[in-house]
Length: 402
Image (cartoon, one colour):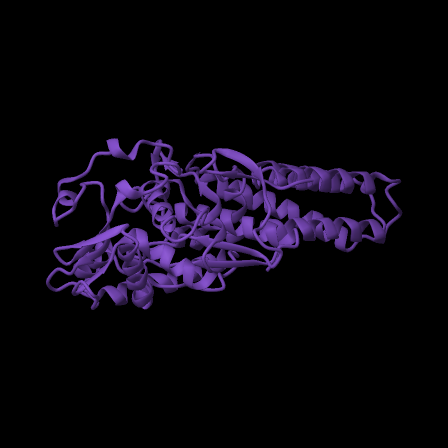
């Protein structure tokens, strides 16, 4: 079987292969830490944790980098409302985020770069863009020349030139209202850093490229994030990258939304479900499994009852695992062998089809029912079934798999 992965840029499933035999270089866009993580965050990071786990299972050595955006307008504004420094708010939410992800069994990244700790790298990237003619300084800020980009709109598949621009974007000496800020002139009383263009702070779109380049090198295999990041964030990243390297990223993966009454769940809309509240009321493993019941590219309407139902299903799963672990009866007459072979074939076929956890979970639950229906199992059959559950657990991050 061959792993086929859907790439946002080409709008197609393509056979996955890393650039080099040494391993897979994977970058995941992290949260802007102005508030606690919500269920939409959980969906994104659980989904890409499974991507990483499956690549590992297939024998690829994955190096994962995930950033934290720890300085941004929303962080400054929220910190002011609470009477604390932006750095204090960011630190508090980063600690809470990592704890939430640990409870969901999301493996930690090799590196979690923070924007505020990588100002020199970001400044160097901006300077490089100016030197190459892709950017220009104006009134203490620096802007990217969108009109010079080689692939305008190729990631989002939209004509960027027709996009509406708010009034604030037309100020500050821009050559074109579509040009976006790489470096923003500081405002009085806000955090800022020194640069060749004066005191200021980074623009959002340049940050991930600079940090990815430092920790993963000039090109990566996989870039992940939510669908809401395709435009303008990832589109802008792609335009920035082309000034330095051809085909910076091979595969762009984007997860769809969890919705509430057909609206995207988000902090900015105020319709989000705090992840920590759910973790206090439901088994974290059930929350994780519930999130994996739909394909990561499909929008899903929020359903609180899913967690309770999944807790009941998980109890049934663990009973099947215990039955297999302690099996010492007469053999099943070949039933166990046939069920294991069918389960493994169907499970990995689903995972090879763009990480289709919806089908994979369905196969797993059918496997559980089949195990319960077997009257007796020999010790060898139990070991065979246990090994299958172990492999499923490694891929999906369930049953105690680390």
